[in-house]
Amino acid sequence: MTPTAAAPTAERAREALAPPRPPDVPRGARRGLWATLRFWARVALETVGARRLSRVLEQRLRGRGVLSSGLEHVPARGPFVLALNHGHAHLTVDLIAAAVLSAEPARTDARLADEVCLVVGRRPPRASPSRWRRLLRATTDRVFRAWEARVLALPALGAEAALAAGLAQLRAFRRVAGARPVLVFPEGVARGAFGDIRPGAGRWLGGLPAPTVPVAVWWSEPERAFRVVVGAPLAWAPRAELRDLQLGLAIAALLPESEAPEWQALLARWRGVHAASGD
Image 1 (cartoon, rainbow, N blue to C red):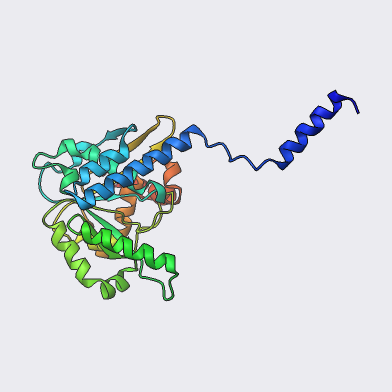
Image 2 (cartoon, rainbow, N blue to C red):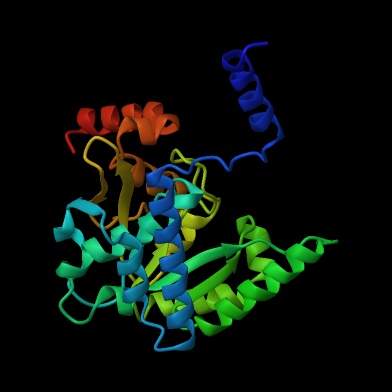
């Protein structure tokens, strides 16, 4: 064997025996990781400090644009409910930040980000949770207790079960909604595209002593920004059993078709009825 032929063979042998190289991490993924770490660092600082939600939300949106419309529908003062589509689970905080921060200029009495109460759903613990789930639950319980003035956790159940399991929390929700702005996700679950309204959500919101303002939020890839569209406060139907549908239609009408495909047939019928009646 000649020296020139032996060199590639030796090189291949060294490559075979070398430890595997770690995969290359794309630059965008690295930026996303650092952004996530900075966000949770801000949450930790605010949890042990002043608990200013505005700082947390501003940290989350840093470096990303928000394009908004319909801000004239945001009440200038007093309590009201922002009812948002949930979108994708990993974008939950981003959607909250985009909606709240874009609506702030319409408020005249206080910073919306520092007075709004976030309403979140919490599933009941599993019958036999793993050690990891017990630790995670204990950690989130501590966080919720620390932020109890700003975050209200309701049972993530159906309407009747929620009334039975979380009546105290639902009463607290009613008290809060009568005193300050509140943000809710009427779907209750993040599904990506806009889905069914959680049974009883419209009926419940329609009975609150504050207007409900539908809001659509989504990430627009062509514009590389979050889009926020605010609709007019709902004039609730006299029949309470129609209010879930009414709430869903109000939010779906603000979204592009790709973000609410399941609602397009209902929207077409709804628009046809209103066009025929001249509304």
